[in-house]
Structures are given as C-alpha cells and as structure tokens.
Image (cartoon, rainbow, N blue to C red; front, top):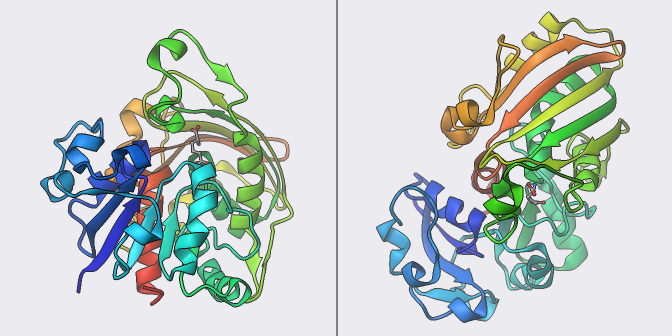
Length: 346
Ligand code: 11C
C-alpha cells in the first residue's frame, strides 16, 4: 500500500532534493506541496526555480502549491516532510503535529528538545519511541521527529562505530562545507570563489550538541546525552555539494588504524530500510580520498566515506565525507520517514 506524503517548504534547496528522491519511491507518493504565501495557488512548475540537473518530475509539476498551514493541507496525508527555514518550522510544525500530522523534519528547530526524537536510523533507531513521551507531554495526535544537521550526520556514523568498539572521550572536528548547505539564497558563487568563510552561522554548536544526543542512551523515558566532549570549527569552501570533515577522536581504549577500519566497515546499515546503503561506511586506503567531487554520489549519495585514518596520541584521526543535501538532509528525512513506517507510527 502506498503512503501519501506532503512536503512543507517544497521549493527550497532541500525541498527540491526531497522531490528528486521521491520520484519515484517504492513506499511514498507525493500528494501535496507547500511553500510561502506568495507561491500559494501557483503550480509547482511555476513556483519553483528548479535547480536539480534532471527535469522537474511530471508527478509534481502540476500540483498546486499550498500555503504552509494545516488548514490548507489535506488531513488524510500520512506523512509530512518538512524542509522549512527553522524560524518558520518553529512556528508552524507544532500546529501540524497538534492537528494530527506526523512530521519527519530537516529543520533545525527543536532538535535538542528532550521529547523530540533526533534520529539517524542506522545509529539510534530506538530513540524514535520518544514519540510516546512527546504525545503524552504535548497532547498531540501527530508527532515531530528530526534528522540532524548535515555536518553532524557526516561524522556521527563513524563516531558511532568508534564509540561502540572503543568508547569516545573527546572529539575535535574542523569542517569544509559546500555552498549548497547555505540554501539557494545563502552564499552566492561570486561571494565564495577564491575564498573560504570561517565560523558559519551556529554550525559549531549544532555539531557539539546533536552528536551527544544522537549517541546518548534512551531508557524509554529520556535520552541521557553521551558525555564525550566535542569542539567544532566550521568553514564554508567553494565546493558545490559534499561536506568534508577532519576529525580527531580520543578513545577510551587504545586503537590501531586496522581496528578502526574494521569497526567502521563492519558498522551495520539499516538493511530493512530502502534508502539505507548496502554498506554505510566505506573506507579509502588512498590518503587523499574521500574528495567531494569524486566521492559524494557513492551509494546514491547516501553513503559515508572515510579516509586518512591515522593513530594519534589519544586515539585516531580521520577524514569523512557525505553528500550534504542527500545523506545530510533530504535523504536523511526520507530515511526517518521509512523508519516511522517500519515502526508503525504511520
Ligand atoms: C550548512 N549544515 O552547511 C548547514 C545547513 O541545521 O540543517 C543545514 C542547517 C541545518 O550551512
């Protein structure tokens, strides 16, 4: 049976990636799209400045764009994907949950709220059951679940593999983030050519908090955040897609590079979920890989690539890469939607 889905914020950079990934999808069918008030009433073709390289899918081209408000969205839609700007999401997502909709949201609002599941299905699927706490506390029939920030998603699966095998004490990370992470209205190509921009808009804090929540323990009532320390430094570079990160991880137990490769390559994917790659983490032997242009599209843009693994005094240093608008945003939300379906929440 097909699950009908809507997309809140369908004309933006992540909204367009959601449409690309859902055309087609074996379980989900797009039945509604929303955008800001000035696009309402137009066809999606008219409203969206379509920037994905492939043609605009016929299945959505003629859909009427609706206002982002529960009054205008059919109430028989099974699942909403939200790629709203966070200030908009903060105001309207609770209205949708209160009206009974289940939301898989990429927006950064509410990610660290204690009763909001923040999940990467391969890493912490059990946190999804926080929905029960959320519904009890807020009296909602619907629910809001979140995926993390794209720079957090890139480093957390390799860190999860290290934490499971050796324990984590401290993480230092420096990012090289693609311009698409700033959205279509963010950094223009002219602003960033021959340049790099340090300290980009609160990314450091997100990486520090979200990673500790994701790798925390859920006891059925609350998530106890992982206690490792995290220090992040985030930088924008002139890459189109794909965030590359340099990570230093201090581990509780001693490690060798060979043990790290083994722990990462054997870290399981979610093989019951359609969008999870066959092998979640692929490790390169070549020290100058992964690179964004060469490696971001591996496994349909849903894989995590690691390279440059070397021993340090406290543990290990490595580089990691993921496609920021696929694995790090639209694909992450869809994977969470597949988890909601698998677990019977929709
Ligand atoms: C960037 N990671 O590259 C950001 C974009 O919290 O979902 C995504 C912001 C977020 O600028």
